[in-house]
Image 1: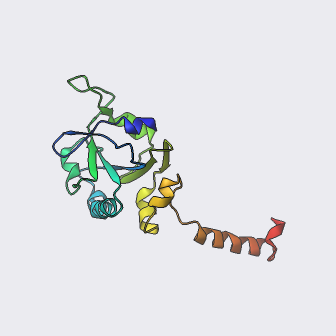
Image 2: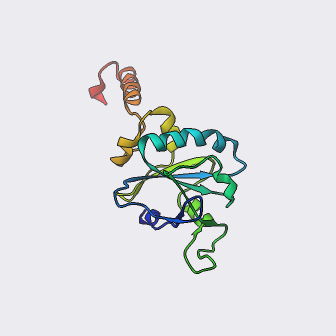
Image 3: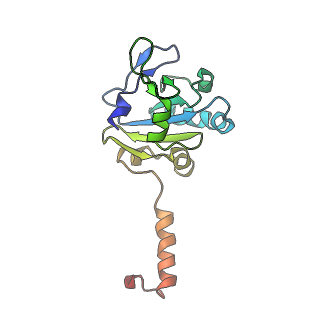
Amino acid sequence: MRAVRALRLVDERDAPRAFGEAEDVALLYFTSKDCGACKRFAPTLMAFAKAHDVRVVAIACDASSTAYAGLDGSNFTRVRVREGAVASDEDGTSVVALNALLRALSIRFLPTLVVVNLKLDVVVTDWGRTVMSLNSNPLPAWRRGESGLIPNPMRAFMKGIEQCAYGGDSSAA
């Protein structure tokens, strides 16, 4: 995911922005101007980004600048995208080819929050929105390269299944 650091980021005035060397986690937020769920999730994402000082990179899947409405502040940048497979702007600088990015990250529905650990160069999860709803602070796990889902309830559930399946002796498993 070294390509994430190479994304051409711009602020709300189209001024270039870059990832800082100290940044370890980036949240890639795929949105659209006509997406009601995106509009409902944006305030939650803004509050999370501000509270935890993490970068959110907004990517409009319809290449519309109005898709960024409601996303502002120093924690938010956006990616200049172009529909189709064109990967360079009029001035010759690179612009993300939207379709290629969506395919590479398997984006199938909106809104999608992809969490990237920049230090480990890995996609930690593409279920970031769900993780945020289940875990009040998944950031430490994301920094470790983990999904952020709380495993304890699942472990307890699996232990119960083992006890049922093996008559209480989980060592038989």
